[in-house]
Length: 130
Image 1 (tube, rainbow, N blue to C red):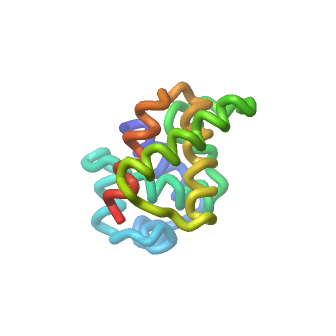
Image 2: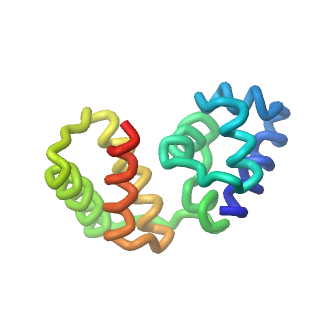
């Protein structure tokens, strides 16, 4: 969590943004963003996804400090099946565009060594926040 906090500070400063400006770009309150930068709160999955989309951040690098590795088709199949199974178990439906972004995010996590069961937990948490 501290590594993510230090990367948030680094990304913000690299773009010459104040905490308030960065919070606005990410759609969170100034106070919430401060707590992420200080490691007082863990940044939610949605925020990490926004960093990827708005700043081109490699999530694997953000989470582990190492760039993402390429995934093979079998890994992609595992991610998609895990997301589908989690959605089914929660009796939830997700818009195709949103599901595609979640697949990309989960693939990056899988490439970083995150287990399938952890990915399913992340998907459940992400859905419960909505």
